[in-house]
Image (cartoon, rainbow, N blue to C red; front, side, top):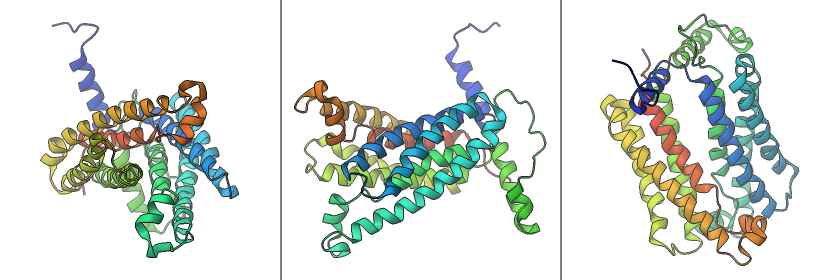
Length: 313
């Protein structure tokens, strides 16, 4: 029986098989680069509101551009994916951890500090935003260890300089982990990242919507869906059926809700005084237009997790 040129079911099976076998480096490079661009735009105008009071506030803006460029480069070049993307992703992850510390310190330095946690978390720097930015860097790091879509066998794993510097026992553990990633056997690790991303996104949505007193009922949806996605991800770590049944359903709901949220945020920007005539100003001071897409990334993580295989160990 011949397959038609357009066969969605067949294409979906091919994509699923590529993910299960760890052969989606090019795709994940592109996703990591795009996610970095979206996160970078969000960071750019959030730090603009703070007038870039500290020079370190420029680092995520610069690194987001570097990660976007290295993701695109990795899409076209195998060597770039394994070297440039890996280095840029690791540096970006470190910068996100540093940014998380500075955001915590920023809340502490506001009047009342942690004695007024709700007020200062809501009105201070977005405490979990650096960690959400780190998810794109994590995707880039994972992509650097994967195989290309056109590869037919796992091939030989080349030891990195870091592997050679580790003690023998740690070296074996690192090699085992890298081999699992190359074969698409990192479902449990991805489930942990999905849960963390969902909780961070849900918390960000909560205090962002709290600022306008949950004016619309739809603003409650990410608050409700986020813990459900996190719970499904945690259960998926121990239960294989939950990973292949419950997790993709909740993840798809989260992704759909993010798309709807993006529409409402975009509409909120356009409806501000001046509308599209003052688009940049309204994007900066209106509802965070890209925030729903970051929540949608958690849903994407969940869908990706559901297609992966579990580690042999």
